[in-house]
Each structure stands twice: as structure tokens, then as C-alpha cells.
Length: 421
Ligand code: LLP
Image (cartoon, rainbow, N blue to C red):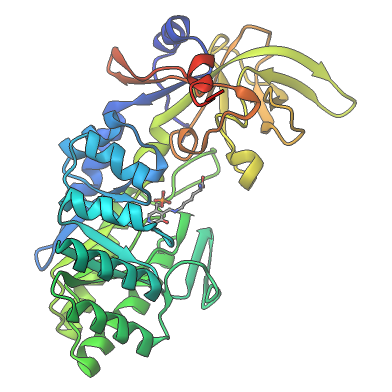
């Protein structure tokens, strides 16, 4: 199965109008993915909610689309919450995560309204409690647990991450019960339930099955032995997408249905009063519906490789340098020519590691050709930097044959705006 991409003539038109590097998102495809989640992540025995993990890519346009499609949000900072609020999201729709929320961020969130805070540790819970008491404002609280299951791509390992910076280890029963008691003793806080997240770009749904087994074993024990009822369970994100032709992630429909049926089975078998199940997809909502267009510049050959340099690189996509992430690209200018050459696609940053694709299969490529990199929609723009004072690229949403600019190009002046002298 080949990777899909928007109409090349539209891409050429957009590159002409906005210049490159340019990020392009297919809005219809994003909406379809969101619907695949909301339609398949449903149960007859408990409520469900799909939270868009806004760290994957956030601007008011994507937040607006997620709201129209009935999604809620996972946010991890005051900045993300600010953007979501600007887009019109109410606190009720926002789940505030993070392992070290500042007092200012927590206060601002309380002022926004009655939402959900996922507390990461006991110190943070005490901070949340003192803010709730002083503002006299309500908040629902989930406790982030570390189930000791970690999954990345094809591998998942049980009990390997006890020293993770996130969450309370699930075997610290006494500490968890004491946190529930702190929440229940505070008149403004409501204990809603537990949260866990086991990794990202998880290609095997068996890893989620293991997370579910571990979480329900714990929830069952809390219910039977300690009389603690869990209203909400949030299983986090991590659903994989296709970056290359070799990646073969399960469909959204099949992962959602498997999670729902495993959870229904646990709830029924253990006779639990679970009211709501949540998941937090980020990458899989926007990742493969986003693309980056670059213009090929100079070329260079060494004894072992042929380089094509592009007009962006690690400043707009740090994932290859940071994680050795792999991408697929195509030459839009020579779209009907066979990709019979292997090039190293390197960026323009002053860093030897600024290599976007080590072995890109392309037709013979010339300066000025338009290159499209697939599946850059998640954690590309959101992790972009101004390294070498490169401005962030503009972002265009396409909708059939029409399009709209949702984020303009960051200019030199934008970058100078922070200088106070
Ligand atoms: N929920 C929690 C608590 C998370 O920590 C994350 C991602 C998600 C949901 C969304 O996960 P997703 O569905 O997007 O896999 N920068 C890395 C990914 C970091 C993911 C961090 N947490 C990358 O570019 O691959």
C-alpha cells in the first residue's frame, strides 16, 4: 500500500503562493481520522471520550476542528491551555497533564473553570489542593499511574520503567490510597480516577491489551479491598502511523474496538462502576495528514553519498536528529519519473546531524525541484525551533481543492520581537 498525498498540482500552487518550507495538512483526512476515533471508541456500558493530545500539533485552527468533531483535549502546559481557551475550548473539555505544573499554570487553569487535572505526584497534589482551597474552586482529579508497561514501535516491555519521571508506580498502593484520601478530604476536589500512558508510535495493539490488564487488576483491587471507586479511566495515547512503506500499524477502528471490548470485559467480569473511558491520541490524529514541502537547493557528492540540500531541516523537523525517525519523500516536480536514485536529504542548519532522510529514493533531482516529505504532521511544527534564526514555516489546511492559511510564516521581525534592547 502506498502512502497517500494531496494533488501535486495543488501542492505546486501552494508552494508558489506561500513559498517553502511549507506545511500542508489535509483537513478532510484529519476529520475522517477524528471520526474514526469517535465512531469506534464507543461502548454501551460506559461513556467514552477521545482527547486530542494537543502537543502533537496545536494552533487555534486544529483546536477548532477537534471541537467541531466532538473531541476533548490533553494539554500539558499553560501555553497549550491558553491556545485552547483562545480557540473557545471550555475547561471542562481540557485535561491538564504534566509532571511539574507550576503554581501559576495551575491557578490559571482553576480560573478558566472546572476541568480535569491529572496529578503526577504527591507534591503536585498538595499544590493543587492549596490552590483549590485558596480559590475555592472545584476541580476533578485523576492520578497518573505508571503501570510498568512501556511500548515503543514493535516492542513492549513489562515492569521496565519503574524509574520513569511520570506518574506513581502502580505497586505503591499505600501512596496511591493516601493521594485518593487527600483528594477526597478536600471539599473542592473530586477524585475521578486514574490515568496511564505507555509510549508512542506503538505498532502492536497487544501492548495496549497488557496496559488494560494491569490497570484493571489494580482498579479491581482498589474497589474490592479498599472501597475506592474509579469513575474515569484514561489509557493515554500512543497509536502508531505509517512513516514509511514498511510501517504497518493497525487501523484506528481495530485498535479502538479492541480497547473497548477488553475494557467492557474487565468492567463486567469485575463488576466495576466505571463511568467513562478515555484515550489521548495525538500523532495518529494529525501525523499522516500533514506534509512538508521543501525546495531542493544545491547538491553535492562524496565518495559514499549524493546529497540534496533542502531549504529547511532540523529547525522545522527535529525528529530524525533526535530519534533517528524515518520519513518518506517524493519529488513533486518529477512526480511521474521513477524514484531510481538514492539521495541523502540534508537540511540547511549548522549541524552535521541535520539530515532529514539518510536514504531517500527519488528520481534524479535538480535544484529548484519541489520535494514533499510525508507524515510530518505530528511533533514537527510543535517541536520546531528558531535554530540558526530560521523562522517557522507557514501552515496551510487544504480542503478538497480549496485551502486556507492557518499559521503564517514566522518572519525575521517576529524573531526580533523578543529583543528588548
Ligand atoms: N498522552 C500522554 C500523557 C502523552 O505523554 C502523550 C505523548 C500522548 C498522550 C500522545 O501520544 P501520541 O498519541 O501522540 O503518541 N516527540 C515524540 C513523541 C512524544 C510523545 C509524548 N507524549 C515524537 O516526536 O515522536
